[in-house]
Length: 112
Image (cartoon, rainbow, N blue to C red):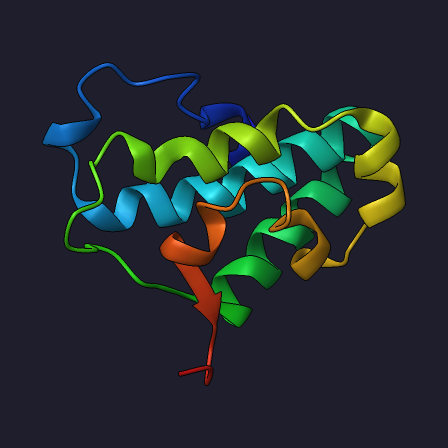
């Protein structure tokens, strides 16, 4: 069985056809994928995906935000340098500093 992070969309030209929540889910998947890739620990990557799903909520759709731009956060986190991935580890808030778009896409559960 392939880990969930192996299913990350590498770049979807038809992102405007996907449901807005997909961009949010891709952020968590991208974090988990990069963490697993950089640490060699698939279980840690899976745990990050699960933590993200439990701790963050989707803010999309956002008026005026091009649907393709919504994927900038996932793309930035997926391509984070391994040195930063190691430093950020399980700190999901730190991962979300990878792109200013992240603040438009997701927010912690319970945040306004």
